[in-house]
Image (cartoon, rainbow, N blue to C red):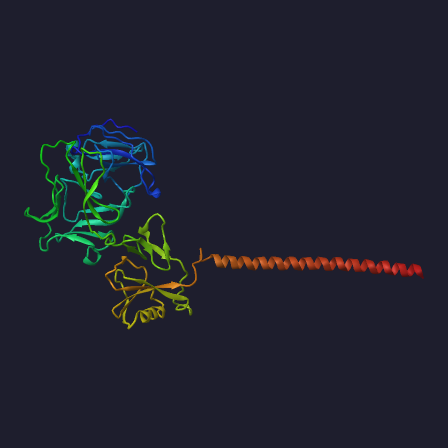
Length: 449
């Protein structure tokens, strides 16, 4: 699939990538890109992979870096689609059947292709120099470095003037946030701005800089498009916001010049439910749990034992309590008790069918049900997590024991019938033999007389 269309480049360092081949979303990865934008104007695409996507990447560097992806949660499109910049100024994908899918954010169209850089909004996971993030606009992380569909973290320019990060799907409330920058009382007109020299800052409604997130890097001398450093800000899949730089005159990779938060376990939900984050060990399942998806921690962990119904007479038996020191989680307790010791807190949970975990700290015992969210190890916290763990391993399928039991009964019945039939046959044969023997004996006696 080839395109002869020529576009004005967005800036000396960025070009529109019309199509790039991708693997199916279920594979969770994107193939190595084989496109090129050799002079910033002419674009082409290979025909490998299971489909195509449309996006923007940084031109002029060896390491292909996507900075914007259209319709990022949609499945890859087939190779017979066409990319059109139609008469009303809209950029669309058109299938062989004539169905159209919009690419740029402005559905009303633009006057010229040279204005495309203002129409690729909102940003996806990357923020570029010259862009602004206004009230309620967000950056959404990707699932992974190779899967650009929406991940589990977001950066939002809040209505109260604060720039903050949260897990996707949570309320914009302080208890769910894990990073923020701003000044209270500035109102709804605060924007995030990014200068060409790499400076990242917040401006209030009157145009005054109120927060410098990163300082710029002014350069001396005359710089060309080939020697000028370039920058980008990315909300990475691990929930860390990173400021990158790349020197165009050097054959090098992107360098991290700033990042926040510093603690890799600060992004809430990084390891999914029922799993905890450890700065040294990474993500681990809590005792009594196993990973749901071996390829991604975002799905968290599930129990590896059979739990009993609270209606059962054995609901509070067959469990032990396992402790994880210096562990904390999102407080969603349904009962708070005063316990003199950690053991007493564990016993209280064991005796409560609804209690599936408890958090003990300073004589306070907080009972909680599953799922356990935002769990992490914090060596500065004295909290002890107590997890209720079953002593019976989980069955592969709850229906399997019944099927096996039924099958065993059928087998016993078949064996019983077979033995009975065999016994009847033996009895019949024995009867015939005995009868013939008596007839033979009677004849011999008669002849003898």
